[in-house]
Length: 285
Length: 285
Image (cartoon, rainbow over all chains, first blue to last red; front, side, top):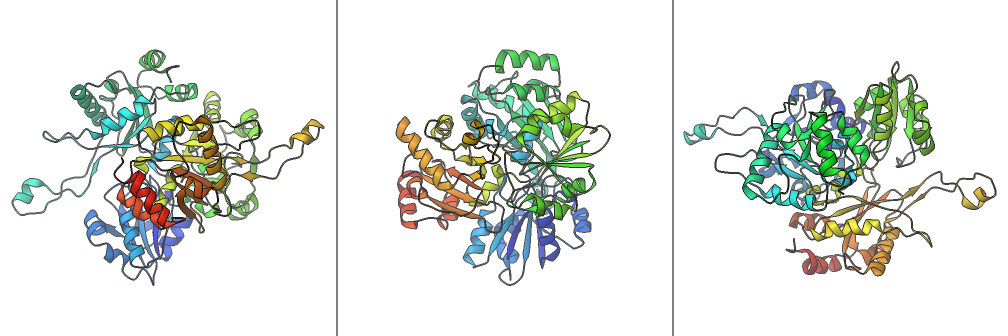
């Protein structure tokens, strides 16, 4: 049997009791470590599980899935995914391959940023589609997120924005010289996201949002030092919410007064927050 | 400290290791048991936790929250919520009250139906806002869900529909005679939801969806006997997916071929599924 086990968001104790039992008994345990990461490292997981864990990078999952699935018709194999196994990234490919090989599979759900973001006080009913923000380069500034945010904004919904992480990326200069050297991991910050959003608005000029639009910056959701800030995009460009992982929620107009009351405590500047809320959000849904 | 602890979706072992630790050590443990239920009863939870649990019904949470919060500035109180503490129902009110009383609080996330529904193979990125469906009566058929589904449909997104549960509802005849007698719990089925949806479409006639629209029926998500079926709304009116809890996803046009491939195994009738997909979904996003 193949078990897809969600690990939750923060540390080794966020696994469910059911999931931990699977991990302890499985013949092999893989950790998907390229679309999301926990806030603790592999060694800490291994110490907690009392067993070794195999890192599954993108190459292994996408090109060598049969290695992962080997013998899974006879023995139990656990494939660990940060968050929920079907959260931000689905592993449908792997499961379709398991089906083709007649390997039974099941999944053990866990917290995903898609629902855990509710801890900021915004009602999950008022969220539209989720989008992703990638690191811009000089020559590559993909703005497809903007069209989807626009759809949400037009009906007054909040948008959760998942921020890029770069782990195990080869250094391109070294690659040109025939050597594989990996860059340091990079995790997009709330400030970078806010600034890239404004850059795209300046270019597209469709007034989907602007420097005075309210957004929530979230850091380390589910961890002890989980942090939320709320401010205008302009304010968030200068905010430092500390260590990764970060996410951003752009507020829609369809708000509830309880959302205002709960969020206000997290305001970068309560005066700006009150003004902007009163002018642009209250009663505008 | 007040701890909001997510219990996940199915049984007592879906709690996280972190959450279980809190439950074992807390001075008092409340179980929120009116907006969602696990598939196991309170006694099974108590046996697993090795301690007693106090049922918190709507009346207690909404009118007597200070009972729950009593002494929580000095001792640890755990408030257990099925799913994620901020999932389908937020408990913002309780937390605002805790803030007002200067009681520290934290939350321990867990799986929510909002992300766990991804196990059916639909990409969570393609979901719009979530809606709720309540039991219709002869005289009360609220159709506000229809307007929100319409917004999702217009931009091609899937809609998760959370189905009504009625627990601890007083019998109205008995109440009129001055006696409080509770009805048997009722949980809406996939079939009832599909039929109510079609009833509203017939009345509103805005062609938001119809008998040939595809939807997924989900039952007991996260449990061993988790079940998915996919069919037209007309087909789902006659489907029995077994014991509660159920949910429904109305498909949007913005689909991915992997979604088709993964879903097809769950089709009530693969011939209808293929025809409808080809005509109304493939390449229509």
